Amino acid sequence: MKLRRKRRTTILPRGVSRVALRKVPTDTIIETVCYYMGIHKEDLSIETRLQKIVESRQLILYFMSLKPISWRAVGESIGMDHATAYYSRTLIENRMATYRSYYHRVYDLSRIIEKTTAL
Picture 1 (spheres, rainbow, N blue to C red):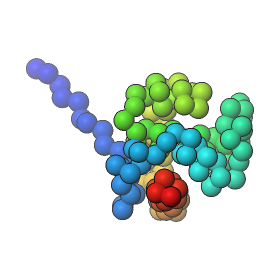
Picture 2 (cartoon, rainbow, N blue to C red):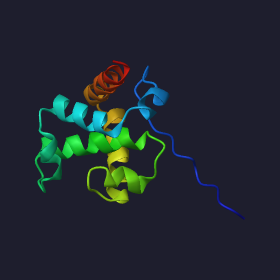
Picture 3 (tube, rainbow, N blue to C red):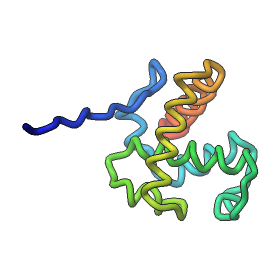
Picture 4 (cartoon, rainbow, N blue to C red):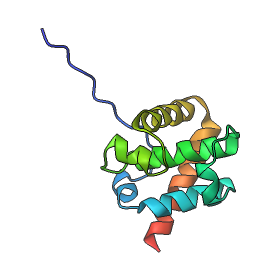
């Protein structure tokens, strides 16, 4: 008897287009999240546990995971491994499901990323 694995679906805020986010260049995602969180792009590579920097990395990895690339490529985009990228997506989705304010933060950020690309 074969066990079927459940296909995991990504939670997206309502009204956000996965197709539009797939077309966004990696640099645009990184720059937009850094600007939104109020950090410098160089701070992402620093080994630190500062919440602002860690959360920025997690958000970048979440938005990168929406692109049609491998987990390894997602992690390597900011110097992390594939397990960190997968964990970041799961963490962001759990926070969005639990905290309404966090859901709105991700929604606002995804709208900003979409508008940045449309310009």
